[in-house]
Image (cartoon, rainbow, N blue to C red):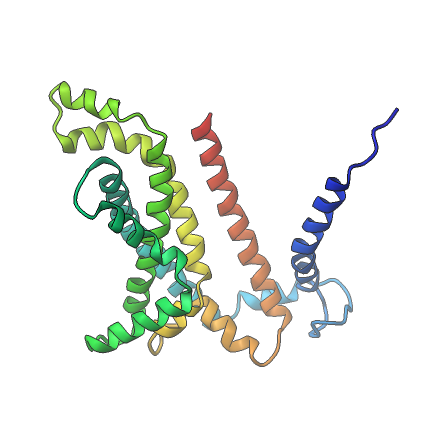
Length: 258
């Protein structure tokens, strides 16, 4: 006798439908032959072809990639050192420093954006692509340190102690013993921070200067006049990129658990 379908299954299906139905509609209309975003008139790749001819969007994409790669690279080094320092060393105010490190994860983006803009104005630093990088390092640093800290919590500190007992210096023990074990966590944190940096609009909008437009800001400036199939195509490509990065991060995590 077949078992009755439980209500949890229908709830799960309904939840997935609620989450992914708008994305499905977006993907379908990105192949619409019509320039209308609400009327289907046939299948076409013309908007994807037109997207590759948009120099302004490619410049914005290049700026976003520059900001994300630079911010993640700097945050990976600093975030790892912060996580190791908070996990392995005792010093006055350690709990306070830990809480302050995680604040950018909790504070709303608009508050970080305004605070960063005021700070740049106070030190008379002109807004440019560099100021966006500096602002993005702040929240990338927090996310990477959180992920690395969770990885550190599952490691055995006796391995480092054994290396020190065998004559290794703290630096050698960190590089040869601890760092290889942290690589999966660092990579996962970097992938998460990269996606968040590429997706950020609020902080980039407040800290960007003339000619330093990132992709989310460029999309926002265009969408104010209406959603076009060209932007639908761009959104589908960005969703595909984010999904691929998420799958890679999950693969790294699953291999680390195994």
